[in-house]
Amino acid sequence: MKPHVRAAAAAVALAHSLGRPVTRVYEHETCACCRISASVRGDIVGGYDHISHCHVSGELPNLYHHGESSHLMLRPKGLGVYSGFDHDTSSYFSMKVTNGEAHMFDHKEDLYFAYSV
Image (cartoon, rainbow, N blue to C red; front, top):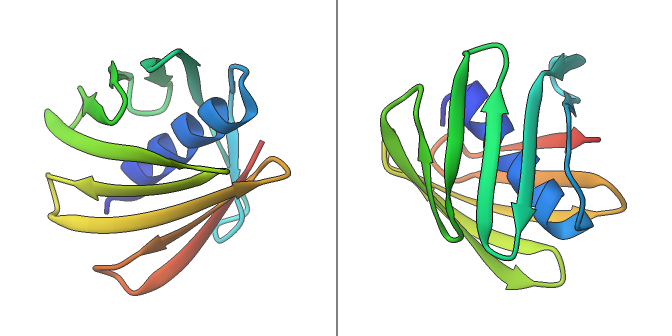
């Protein structure tokens, strides 16, 4: 997955799991703050990537990343667990959200990534 799409997916999962809007996420691997806002009401997602200047929207599990013009699947499985698929890069991923942290495994890259609010 592309780094900004991965961060957007983490922001949406964090907002969904925490039940409140997220205004930015911190990416632990790069020690950088990603300016991505996301909110989830029911299953309706609204988000904005302030770095890429684009929206991320949709209804869980089907999201659309407007900057990449591509679909992203983010399926809640309960208790902060998510599975997903990025259609742009044909990448599967899985994520676990606990205590304000999202831990993602990108299956295509075979790497873990961590984000926090």
